Image (cartoon, rainbow over all chains, first blue to last red):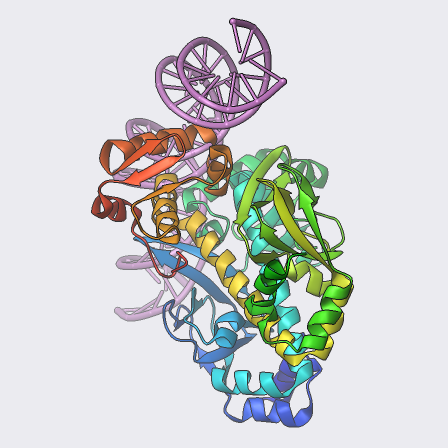
Amino acid sequence: MRTQDLDLVRALPLFKGMADPRFDELFRGAFLQRFPTRVVLISEGERADFLHVVVEGAVELFAAHGGRETTIDIIQPVTTFILAAVIQDEVYLKSARTLTPAQVLMIPAEAVRGVFGQDAMFARAVVSELAQRYRDVVRELKNQKLRTGIERLANWILQNDALSGGKGTFSISSDKRTIASLLGMTPENLSRNLATLATDCIVSEGREIRIVDRDKLIGLASPDPLIDRS
Amino acid sequence: MRTQDLDLVRALPLFKGMADPRFDELFRGAFLQRFPTRVVLISEGERADFLHVVVEGAVELFAAHGGRETTIDIIQPVTTFILAAVIQDEVYLKSARTLTPAQVLMIPAEAVRGVFGQDAMFARAVVSELAQRYRDVVRELKNQKLRTGIERLANWILQNDALSGGKGTFSISSDKRTIASLLGMTPENLSRNLATLATDCIVSEGREIRIVDRDKLIGLASPDPLIDRS
DNA sequence: CGTGGGGTTGATACAGTTCAAGATACGTGG
DNA sequence: CCACGTATCTTGAACTGTATCAACCCCACG
């Protein structure tokens, strides 16, 4: 593992405050692995054996039931995922697969739980992380239950633009079908909703999205600090 | 506060393991309050001042946006709520109001965060609680995104029956409109969905629901341990 | 008794899905 | 480098599920 990658991981809020010996202990059994696109890393229902950290590439968290499938989140570097299952020593509720070629750091769940009991700073960081994630899922639940499809799309565009610097133009980082699933709609529906927005306030060319009338888009989206991550 | 109520609170997983002096510290500034029906206890967007514990009655967690409103959870005694906002010292993402006359214990957020830093057992319990709640919201998100309205209703009936002893008959604990909102549908739709199930596998009389063909209901619901709390 | 809120039922409208066909982009091998 | 094949995306049409609007019922409560 390259030193600079390790430094990035070390700098995560989850690990930042912990003592060096504890950090070493955590990473003794850890290993960094490279995966090609569309590889399933974990499957829902399996026992949580590793805490995962996306170091490079993108990972999709998804869940399936009765022939249907839905995207729950898209994880960008550098971020951990499925911490709750690891801490609780429980089965995963979500599956994960790579959206792009990716590098993932895998830390044995056993070690995470062990260090958690020894390092108060780490325990404190785990709490913060869990609380933050909890609130994020609540936001997403509100997003799904209180908004229509086109409203979710409009807000997603605003948020993605903000994340990529607020330049008014950005590029979709994955398949549109994945975005559709994340937004809780079919690919066909995403297409149509994009077409609708394109008459008014955006231009959509392939994976490029450009905001041309931000006020109108905001009017349609009605962003809300209690739903959208600021 | 009656001793038996205090004992119930003390016995919650969140408080069970903590040292007595810490528990006393936590409850020094706490107070128990009685509320009539339909009283708003907290509003989304407000700063988290208290950790709440429902001691008696039922409390609805809900959220509003753009003229719409949705029920997120119904809290039965004895359970804490909005722990994440308190720990993070953040604003509430959900509002809360009583569904029935209720007794609620309110613990100053300041004290919770203080004791959290001093008592390792309590910190550990907070983590467990947060992780559990996190997983519950993920389950609910999957429930909403992967199931149709009637499937959610069928599963809700199965779960409520199980919670009330699996006798095959139970009574709805609140307005049907609230249940409809919890299930992510309009009251009219709940009515119709209940009517549909009533041709087949249940009897619905007022607030009483009786399961008459459990196998058929299960077939319709396809319960899933990775969505429904066991 | 009225009166009103919750609940049901009906008619209609809309959002979203499904199925099917066509268009576009993309990677691969000749 | 081009041609081909495949996957993704778009568009169209029909259909389903759900929401909305409105009327009505019923029971609880004043």
